[in-house]
Each structure stands twice: as structure tokens, then as C-alpha cells.
Image (cartoon, rainbow, N blue to C red; front, side):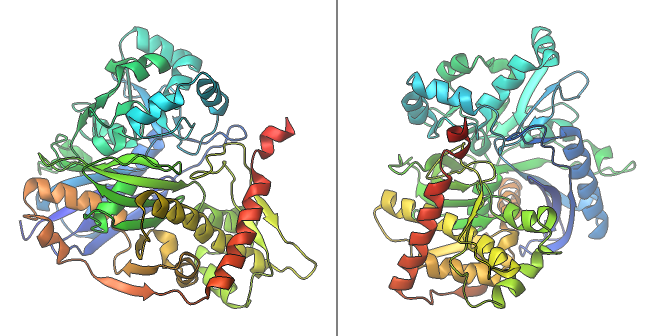
Length: 505
């Protein structure tokens, strides 16, 4: 095994990546390609599932070539993925019946409100740990079943399959031999009972979703079949198993080695996701956080987590770059943050697709507050970066309340974690110590470790822990009075965006 590698496919919201990792946990090859985002109507977000498949496949082939290895050199493959996004496809042709509906999509907001008004939220929350919100997969699956004629036809013909992106990739990689997911992804569908570890029939009946179109649910470190050799190259001979599958945020929690109860990580990706490991018992949140399955390894007990979700984080930096054209490259944000001493009381609320935890307001929309004649581009850039930290701080405060204790340490990862200004501001506004690892691709590393543990690439977690190295530490550098004043401005700004589109009706 020492001369072999693990390849992990990281299927994100805006791009597909593949990485090659060696036994020391070092990344020896990486390939990444963005794919198209579709916005057919206000609040709708879609992906072309075939484009995701082709993009992910090309990065997998590309990274193998970059690392100068053959399929026989690969011990196993791991998969981590954007969660909640769903695909429905024809199992005979392998073609999707509709575009993938993305986790950010809000088209089922009214239906969710209808179910809440009928009193279903408590039952669903107790069984799934989630809240009734268009964020999750169930209402997206139902929408396709109700609104897509092709889906209705294929369902009658018993040709229809459904799944999150991990399931779609597994099915394609194994040439349709395996239709499966893991417990972490299943727990994000709003259809999975996190207490019984099975699809819940009462909820399936409520959403009118047939059990037979859903995948088999396995452990996160498990046997998900072998990759069709020609997916590597036309002359490949290696028999490579898929042995690690885990949703991206849970994968980052494991990749950061937050394996003990009370350990916390925050991932700064397209969205921002804060998770705290709560051990082998689910904790019910009093602050509208989500109770979710973190992972399951082989025959060990399931691990649970509390999670807070920010819908727009790194996507706000892309908005500055692509829509407002205030910056040319995302890496420029630290420069603009450094050339102004303060934010001039400018606040940006990037609730472009509504607000996640702890507000859960699908009708909120983005806004900029505090504009004056003296406001410059750098103030808006700085306020946008700070908004990521403010949103994360809302989650940290809610977690502290649920856990009944102060969070002293936060482990960070994701693309925006490269911003020293953001990390320092986060440390100061949340009054926490922040550790940024040398390898911030921890989302992919979690799935890598899951895959490696199953095939014995690493004997146990203790062996993996030797690979963990810290790149930089950030400590708070503002006083309590300044912190409270800044947070007050943020709280006022958030309140003014709530119910925006609803109040306009």
C-alpha cells in the first residue's frame, strides 16, 4: 500500500475537483474545472447533471495523468459532494429527466410553508433533525415528479432512479451496477430517519416519493462497487474500488479530524458551514440549527453533529467579481480590505437566495446598508468579506447556546479561508482562536480518509492524525465594546432584509 495513492472526487456546487493523496496525507496532484450555473427563474438554481458527470470524469482522468500514476497505483477512490442537490434519471438510458435542482434553489418555498401551516414541521424535525425548508432534497424530488412529464412516464415504467450527486456519480462510475448513498448524504434529504437509519415511510408518503427510486444507504466508509476500468483510460486494467462516500461538510469535519465531541470546524466555500461533533447521540437544537449525521465508519456507532448553514459565503466574492466587476480576481479581496482602516459602517447582507440558519428565511434578499457619498469600492468589498464572518458568528453563537459552553477553537478550511483578513476578522468578531491547516482541501481529505480506512491504506485514525499540520493561527485582536458595536450594526442590517420578497407581494 505504501506505493499506492487515494484519489478523491470533490463534486462541489460550482466546480468539480479531483485530488491524489499519498500515505502522508499530502496532495500530489489536483485538477479542477468549473461548470455552468443555470438560473431559469428568480430563486431557481439548476445544474446539468451530465455536465457534472463529464466534468468530474475529466478531472479524474486529468489528475491521474498529472500525478503520473496508473489505475493499478490507486488503492481506492473517495467521493465527497455538494449535498441536497438532486438528480432523477432513466436507469436504462442513463439520461437525466430534468436538470439537477441545486441546494440553493427556492422554488418550493410556498409548498414548505403549506406543510408548516398543516403542522408537519415537528414530526419531520424529530425524525430527520432538519427543518421544513426548500434547501433539502425532498421537496425538489417531489417538484420534479409533479412537474416533469418525462419523470412521470419513467416512474410508471419503473425506469426512474433518484439520488444526490454522490449517488449519480457512483451509478455512472460503476456503469449502473450500484445505486447507493451514505448515511451523511441521506440525512440531508428530509426523507431519512436519523434515529432508525432508514428511509422514513411516513415522510415518503407525505411527499409522495416512492421508496424504490431511492438509493441503498451505506456507511461512509464502505464498499460502493468498483470503477469501470475504461473510465480511467481505454487501456486501463486496475480494479479500483469506491470505498469512501460522505457529504462535503461532514467530510470537512472528518478531514479536520474533529473526531471528539465538542470539536468545531467552519468551511468557507460557496456557502459557509459550521459543524460541531456531538458524539454518538443526536442533540436537538433550540436555535434552529440542524441535527445531522456526521459519518459512520464500518461497524462503529454513528457520529452526529449540529450544523449551521450560510447559503452565500464565497459566492459573495464571486458576485463582486462576476456581477459587480469590482474585483478581477477573488484573491484581490485582502488588498482592498487592507487599504481602508474601517468599513465606514457599511454592511452587506448577501442573502441572494434567502437566509440559512438561524433565520431560515426564504424571502430575505440581499442589501447594502450605510452608503454615503464617501463610500468607495474598497468599503463594499470589505463589507462583503466581513459579512461572511458575521453570518458564521451567528452560527457559532447558536452552537454555544445549544452546547451550553463557549467555543474556544475553530478549525477552518475552504477557498475563502485563504483570506488572512477574513480569518482575522472571524477570530475577532467571534472571540475564538482559529487554526488553519497547511492543507485547506480538508473537504476532499475527509472522503480520502474514509476510503483509505476501509481498504487498510491507513490502519486507524491515530495513524491519520500524524498527518495533521497547522499553517497559521489567528487570535482575537479587538475589545469587547468594539465587537458588540460591530455586531449590533450587523443585527440591524439582517432584520431589515427579512421577508423582503414576501412583503412586496
